[in-house]
Amino acid sequence: MTSSQESSLFTNTGPWIRTIPLAELPVDGTGRAIQVAEQRVALFHHEGKVHAVDDACPHQGASLGDGVISNGDVTCPFHSWHFDLCTGQNTDSLDACVAVFPVRVDGDGVVEVQLPA
Ligand code: FES
Image (cartoon, rainbow, N blue to C red; front, side, top):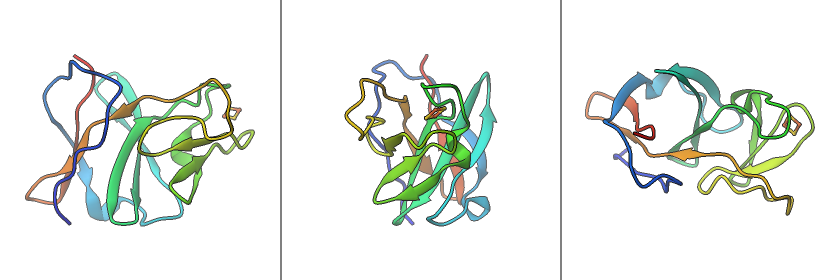
């Protein structure tokens, strides 16, 4: 896998932060929630790309890292709202979205994330 950078809702980001080895992420199906500095981040490895979004669902705060992935969306485990992993937009036409963080995999196979500065 090559490094990739996803879209972000933020224009001012901090430094890259090393997190976990890519090998520790489930491939498709589900994700994993981790703590990155003060932020809970849900990581996903889906269709060959890594995605990082705010772990807290904007509805009632469920962990999106426990959600299931389907067709590029993560489904919240509490009430089944769907969010696009690339944009963070709610795909149920609701006025809600989750923050998407820039993410990449470094040369050692470690997932790195940028948070808002
Ligand atoms: S907490 Fe996520 S849809 Fe309700």
